[in-house]
Image (cartoon, rainbow, N blue to C red):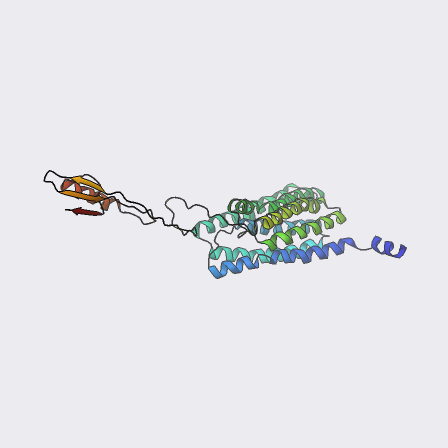
Length: 302
């Protein structure tokens, strides 16, 4: 018993959690592969969002910069180097298959975070801050905030899951590995006495659990098709039910004793665009022949 306690006491926990963190985070970075394979097969990003990958890319760059300043966190260097590499691949695929509006929004976010934002951070930490401790404090808090952003980024997808009762756009593997990764990196930060690594992973664990609960709750739920906005074209999977309608004919007597039977007009709403000019021409023609009402589909004169 004493030997076992001695073993655990001298076990290099930082190395163990560092290796575990790298292994699990490696799987986290690879977990979106099915999503991007689907994007590649369909040649469309559909309703997938780019913000988790934009923020993830920015976060990996920031942690590399943090590791460069601190110098003794090799496990942060290895995993975030791979993170930068794989996020670039994901974003490239996303930009290729995204529609014009989504592509422009993604490019704007990349410029905002990774060009302007990172440039400002480098300026303040390397020019304004004069000592290493001050630089680590500034950069550590910035990394902490954006690590939280990585975990908060899927909130939009979670809201969509609740609204549509569908987990179609919330990959389970990503949620699962993010949760597991957050636990391991929390203990790594705890062993290193690095609050900037430990604190954000507490929230990461909480959001990961919430995503998996949502997935379990809505996994077998019947999806709700969101209504198409007016003027938009689209397809609906809703079942169409046709019911017979009883028509009451209208008998119109004339001065000559001739009766006309009008069958009321039956209209069907569809997505076909109607030319306003054509409707105006029909109305003018009917007015010219003395008809100021809607032309019936069938007129029977006896």
